[in-house]
Image (cartoon, rainbow, N blue to C red; front, top):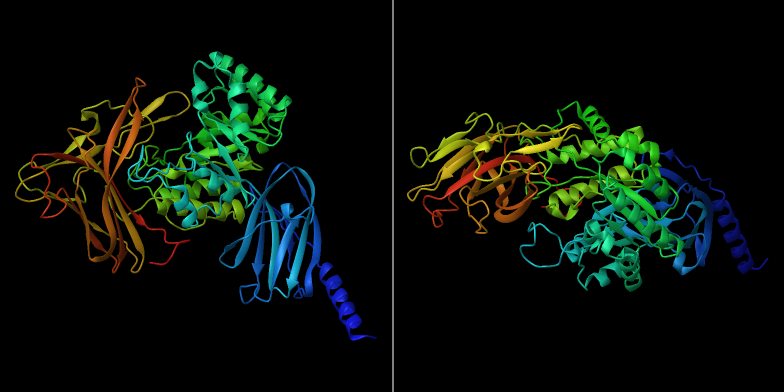
Length: 618
């Protein structure tokens, strides 16, 4: 027999042997993730003659939604001896799954319609393959992409530019971006890059304009014109839907019905945000319509304040579902028609869910996602859409992305971290117990005093849980409940600074921690002047510190808005021992003592472990 024929015969036998490797899916991993395909080749596939189809695996998509494909590389962690390509249904370039590098994986996502599909695997050379897995995962939504205005932006300097998000590789766990109401023209380039990886890009341009006076505007014309002009959009969101307003519901329902009948939404989708407080009896007709088509989904807005006690987290989350009538919503709306929206934020956000300085926000997010991954209510939910995610600083943004990967892609049920919900690093961090645990080093008599938040010189009933001052409200299903607290006020002295000190205890040597503090001009809390104050940690290695101004816009009880300008102080340090000393000063330095007589209010001192994962080492 000719050597060439022998080689072809051996190649054919080898490919047939490899093609016999069975698919052994693990099935449901948690409420959001179902594994459909899992291949673990026992032999290295070989295709020295060029690109060759290695194997085809059939799977069935239970509902319209997302798949995640991961190629885990072999012992050497690379595919240097060859390559692998994946196609869905047909072996055409347009059907190829585009994969990105992540640690020892190559991974990608794609939106698929409900029904039967085929994963086609092609190999070249002799690539190292440890495992190939394909999972059904939820929509993981980045809401919303930020303005590209440099410097201080409209609400917070922590708005992230889209190029920064791409550059820092923060967006990889997400598969949907919702952009600005008025997206910059440069977004077109980002949309092309984003959608080329199989992901989706949604708009929300001006939809809030129709919350009032909708009867005088042609919503159908507006939306269809927008979509025709923006063919590179996969859909859009309608924010602030109110199911308790029958006229608005009827108008919206008829508009969407016409768009569906006219084929406008054959390719694009609509996500409807609505407050989770409305009475469910008014949801029924809308939800019957939403259930009738795959292009519509609803997003209940459930922004929970972190008032939960350690060990009682699941009870708190369940009671929140009940108080917001969401258990009744489940009677009308199929799980795969819903997207869960929860509030996020930290010391720089007007949507801050912290109501106690002793609560670790990162642990609260972790516990909430763990609950969602396991609680039967969330089984087969279509997606997760955290609200205004661009308000986060980069540490919390990376933390959220890591949590989404852990629960919504990897399908884990257990917590990502053992970070405690209640931190004891700083005690009485909100001054509610007066001077206890603190040392006040006054520059003059009565130059540091404690005041009650009810004494604030502006409207005391602020909307949402605020980090500063510690005056919070929430809805318990029957009425609004208000919480009050204390804060410290220092009066700047010309001769020396006022110092507020406390020993930080329970540190782990080598661990990186962060300190975040809010303060403001007590007499002029709407002042746009940036106050420079001091923050130090003695007995540790300080890595970074600074002062940033940010704007919080609150809606008061009488529905008026007040813009509060806060000074956000931050410091990052590495522990060199088990204790260190935190020092807050109303002087930035000896060279910059500030304006004598100015009164500064302080609250919400947050000290917690700093998340260093999924980013370059220090």
